[in-house]
Image 1 (cartoon, helix red, strand yellow):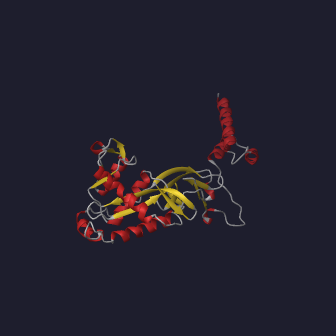
Image 2: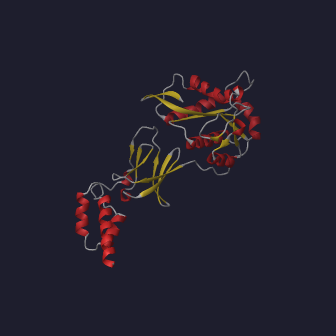
Image 3: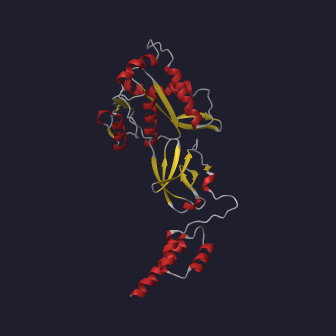
Length: 302
């Protein structure tokens, strides 16, 4: 973690870096938190940046990759192992107390903190990561005395040995199951994203990628939003998800209401009045009434 100065104030961020062992080419990005999803997102971006993958990826003994053990006894989480197989590399954890390996992994963080972050202020995470990529370009083209060359020049040789990337690379995503709230939003990471008002009360499948929030009603894509550039709670609304000005919003009947009308025919006026008096959409009272109707039908049959 590093403290970064944003326009809104100083806050902690999680820094990820990847360095090629021969040329010392570096790539870094920063995130509000670092989960397996962010790890896969970062590695995907890094491999695209380098244009290939090495056969081995030496890591610190981080919990987002390690399932159990350390060093040679380390076993990777199956999810991360499947990810690495797709790009043709394996995760290797350095041994505990191996100062050389540990330093190779952790030294870039000291460099980033005292070179890139020092004295800089950023608007948001989008601005931070764009400028971090530009900083990597600059440092990878700078002459290193201990290398007697620039990382870019050494990379010309190293790139020939990298494993080629797949022809098509799927952006990593996280699946969320969300119910559209009474005001027409789904919540992802404390941020509210609008959904079509006709789907209020329905369960949606929400896909979170690095840049987008995609809302699916079954197989049908019904909404797309850009991810909010900060982790603070915000409300993002697509005007197309709201009824046109001057028109009355008509919501479809809920499944509970349809079942209730089938169980107790002729109760339309009573159900409408019950919904008006109930809190929210009246789901709970409708379910109770439907249960009573089913019990009456059961007694009538007996």
